[in-house]
Image (cartoon, rainbow over all chains, first blue to last red):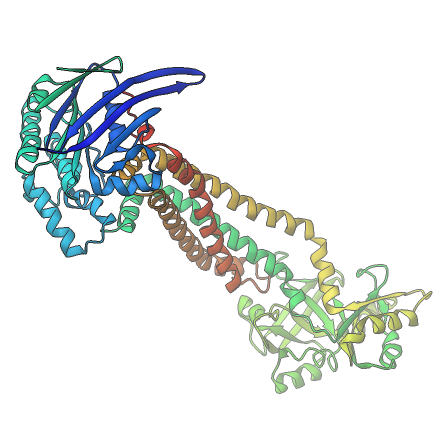
Length: 226
Length: 385
């Protein structure tokens, strides 16, 4: 039986605008098992990206705890969070967020610069990651020389190159056409099934969500199970 | 692939903006170095003085003369090892714009007191033999293409009329600090003429140059010389040669101070320009920094990128500015040779110019760097959902 990888317990999150408190998430409790592929759905402003960010340790809950594996993410310092993210989390952004001055190879190599791997070992891992996403022949291409779908595949290669336990994807198909979106979803499904990656994906797209094993809905900061 | 590679590539992203910033930096550093060279040139004559030489002038002002009869009294003082005299001539060559320092001096003693003026003995002999002989500095001779044996004419203003001279010799400075733009001729040439044309002006000199045995006694010697002529019709004012030269510098001190302030302002302005460039750069890349932070990069990586780019621009701009300075100063030296006989970029100026550029690069990165680090990942990614 699969173990729990992510445990979100009684999490509340509010933002403050001047003296006005804006609640975003209310009493969220969620368990994600190793190997799960979870789709978080919900209308804009429902708090799904905020929840994803808190699991990634780039935002903090107002109250409650978030654990990933044995780590209490909400209690780590910024510096410790940075180190933890680099080894544990692979993040895929809606708008790819590749470095425009780096080619595909260099973009994928970026997270490996924080490891102790030597140049040869880094090259091997980058080539493997780009091979998984089917872009071995685009290594020297810069982001502006790639299509949106290809850029997102490079971003996914960057997310998996450190072999993280958890992949967090924020609307990975949100900026893509139907065909490219389908390709990305096939790729994420493959990462989940073939490489046993646990994936949490935020999406508006019901077709994308169908690829996930579990779908959860957030509405007005509250979680609803499908 | 390293962070430095990202820094170098980022610097080329907005080539026009980067180029303009680098050019601005180069011009600022060049201005700083040229102005500093100008200030050093202003003081250079004082640096070339000897500590054992005193200058004695009329207490009223340099425009008034002293009787040559003071010579014996000063020479007789204990501690005086040499004495000579000089008179400012104030003429021009062919055209009024051809101005250069001209001194009528005693042919037997003056250059003995200035061993830093290197003259061949044969030329000194010719100088002593002919009353209208002149010794000229190497730079001055080069400027007008004069050589030994040439006959030239100066138009006098303090001593009106056309004055014919024979170039008897050319002196070289012992060091590069020595002014090689002087025209030195015999005082008896004008004095003999004055005896005939304006007898009341005969027998007077502009200043005495007094060599003393012990430079540490210069203040005492000045007092003793001035005491000799106290309450006379021609009271004297004695000072060290350095103090005498600095009195000229003091006349333009406000100009020099103003110039120095401008050089600092130029650096201040370029600091603002580079800060603005780096702030724009950091603002445009705030989402990239957020992505890097998401991937696990630390604040020092982010600050390192901004600081690296700022220092790269500052270094290129600084080196370019110093290169321009080296190209420009010989041209300025040629144009201002009469006013600034020594106009040369000092090594310390190059070091200061480069340091100023590096400091500008460092401080320009501070504010954008702090802002980039303080911006949260969420704000950087603009995730509001």
